[in-house]
Image 1 (tube, rainbow, N blue to C red):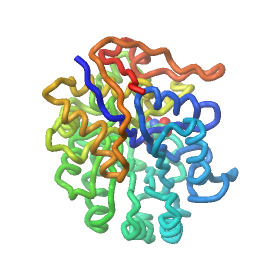
Image 2 (cartoon, rainbow, N blue to C red):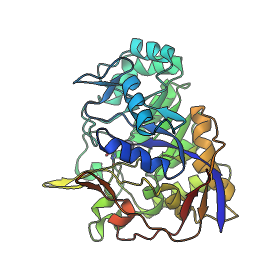
Image 3 (cartoon, rainbow, N blue to C red):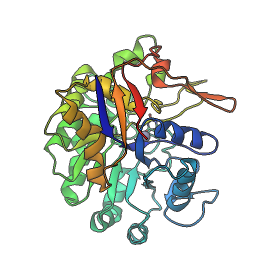
Image 4 (tube, rainbow, N blue to C red):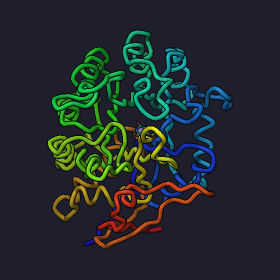
Length: 361
Ligand code: DOR
Ligand code: ZN
């Protein structure tokens, strides 16, 4: 069984910086990626639009140039969202939009995930004119949808969790107050989020990662498979089924690929675990596995992987192609200098993928 598809866009991934950057970009090119939305949680974070990088902040202009160079100009589209902080102003949004460099802004829950300590609570931007400016200027809001500073049962409990809370309480308020704001709910993991996005206006869409379509918290806990530890956490089977239902629906125009691939050279730390699953090289193969790709659902798969995302972000559909074939394929971990980034599937001790990928250029 073989399927040829237009090259796709990964509309949420982490590429980092320094020596990791060329390696992570190359692993995205190797899996048929035409373009990327590259997350701004670098060190320092991307909190300004134009000009040169400084010690305390990076700019979209400079980081984009670095990403472009790392990919030898083979990525046709590169979006870098502006990392929202309490220093972000409405003027920065209007000027950024006018310059053409600013397409989207990223909300991080303060201290909620890797390098998110510069974020302010969502209420800040709802009240200080930043979301209003984004709505007016047509700038997309990328949301990491978890309520910050929750603990214990409220953070991850039987009946609710940080994402569940955020999609019950916060995102509906944002969508109501800013009806023309385009909102990309990123890496959703719960039935609550999937249901919310399905019933919201066409301005509200969501990305889904391969790991959240394939695995549940049981896979993480049995054997403590920490390479599957990412944020938001993998949830329960009811949630996974809701995500799969949304992604594979033939009428789906709102849900699309965004891997949240996040390279970590040190996953296990002295007192915990770095959050992030690395799915460079292997993401389309994992999505195909999650869909159980066949002639019957090929159109839905193509919508999810290749068409819905670029439509929302107003990007051209690639005229280059790649092919997925139902044939086993294995990959080594990324080796960068003396460091190693473990592929999610290797970290789960299942190195053989059931789909293989080849490029057609
Ligand atoms: O698992 C995650 N890893 N979630 C995030 O939100 C950030 C990411 C990272 O940067 O490693
Ligand atoms: Zn991310």
